[in-house]
Length: 334
Ligand SMILES: [Zn+2]
Image 1 (cartoon, protein in one colour):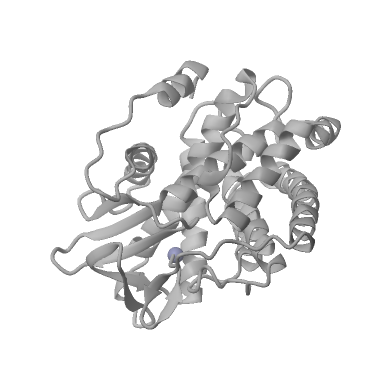
Image 2 (cartoon, protein in one colour):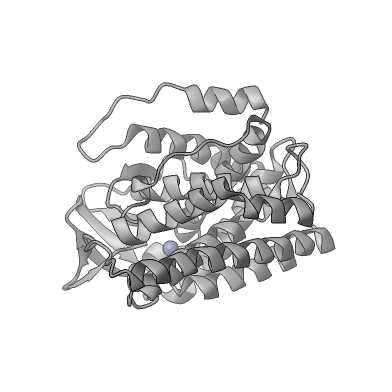
C-alpha cells in the first residue's frame, strides 16, 4: 500500500447508514479487509465463502467479534464491534511509532524504540486508550491522535493485517466446521435478532486463532512492501488484548469475564507466537521481531498498569459495562 493509497482510504467518504446499529465506517473497513482475505483464499484455492458469509458492524461497546447463524437463512453472520476496530487502529499507531524506524519501513533500532516509549505523546495516547476502555467502558471514549506522516503506510498495513486476523479468526470458525461441531452451543443477544450466537469450545477458539493468524500473515505477504511487523500483527493484537485483560483484573474483574468463551488472552498470545514461529518460513528474523514486540509490550504494560493502580488508589471505579445476555448469565461473546 502506497502512502497515497493509505491517504485515499483515510479520506474516503463513509457509506450511508443502513440500519440503526450500523456503523458505516466500521462496515467499510471490514469490507475492505474481507475482500483482501477472500482474494488470498482464492489464490490458496480455499473454499469460496463470499456468498455464505455476511459481515456486519455492531456497536455493543466491547472489543469483540462474534459469529451468529441466522434462523431465517443459511448465511453465517459475522459481527465486528466498532470498538474492536478503534482498538486495532490505535494499537497499530502506538506500535508503529515505537517499532518502525525513521525510514518509515524498517524495524526500529532498540534505541529508537526506547526513545519513542519515553515520549510524552506516545505515553499519553497509550494510557488514554487503556483508561478509556477500562474506566469509561469504551475505547471510543479515547481521544483520536495522529501519527507522523512518514509512518502512514506502515500504520495502514499493520492496521489492515491486524483487522485481517480478527476477521480471519471468525472465518476460520466457518472453514473448520465449528458451526456444526457438537461442542458448539448457542445463545442469544438483544442486539442480534432472529439469530443464534455461536459459542465455540476453547479448543476450537485456539484452532481459529491458528488459522486466522496464518490467513492474516498470508494476506500481509500478498502486499508489496509488507514487513515482518505485519506478519507478526496477530501477536501484537493478542498482546494488546492481554494488556486490556490485565487492566480489568486491576479493578477486580476476573480474567476472561468480559469474554466468556475464549481462553485467557495470555494463553492465546503464547499459542499464536508458536504458530507464527513454527508455521511460517520466516526463520530467525521473525523470532527477533517477536522478541522486540515482547520487550515493547512489556514496557507498555508497566506504564499502563501503573496508571491503573494509581486510578484505583484514587477511588476511581470503572463504569458498569452493559453485558450481553447469553442463556441466563451475562456475558460478552466472541
Ligand atoms: Zn472465536
